Image (cartoon, rainbow, N blue to C red; front, side, top):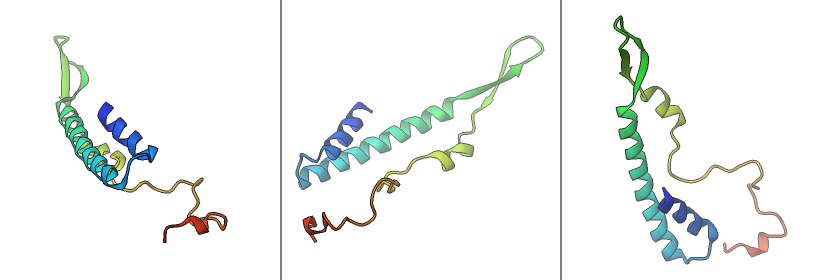
Length: 99
């Protein structure tokens, strides 16, 4: 996670060139997939304490992550535009565009 945070910081900083940015992005995607795999593995090992049996021993059942996984799992890719970002460049910055 620390390395993934550093990749994001490097990309957001904007101080590295296009080639290095692409390389760092690819590294970040590999790290992100690894983190998701670790999380999925951990979720599969979680058991929910559902009560106690007649002898007072804990009773557990497997954790079903599929119920929340699809709805809440972030996907890698382009960020969504937030309400404070402008969809179109303003007239003042239109001349600064590369294309």
